[in-house]
Length: 181
Image (cartoon, rainbow, N blue to C red; front, side):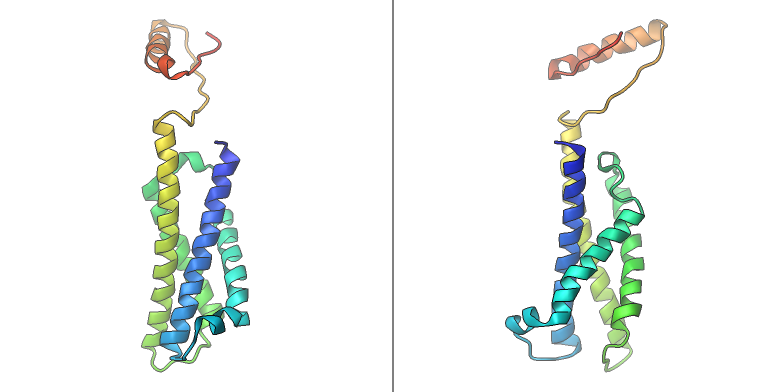
């Protein structure tokens, strides 16, 4: 597979994760925070829901692009990716909370905590799950040598020759080619 396709998969997964998280959060807000009797048809026909399901994911993908999440999808650490996702999720949810959710009707101040942590939890868990699945697939492709990296080996002494011979012996069976010796 090519690098652009993998990058596009990450972008689409992040967009889908943000859309799912916002959709679930919107339903949670209507049913539990505002305690309204909503039916699925009423939620889907709500213009705020439709705008949110389109605009919010685009903003998340833009934020991830700004911090360089999609720069090199082949050289990602799953643990570092998890930490970066949590960090960006906290900042993004804070921005959403103060710009869109602070003016909601609340019964007590605890409602703000429920609102914030529900959105944070939904967004982080869904996004991290999608990214973990994609990263694991890429790492498995690297281990199976379906994804390869061009490498330049510089040297002229016996150690360089021995290393090249060892690499040819170990990797030649899988169809790797060594050019330019």
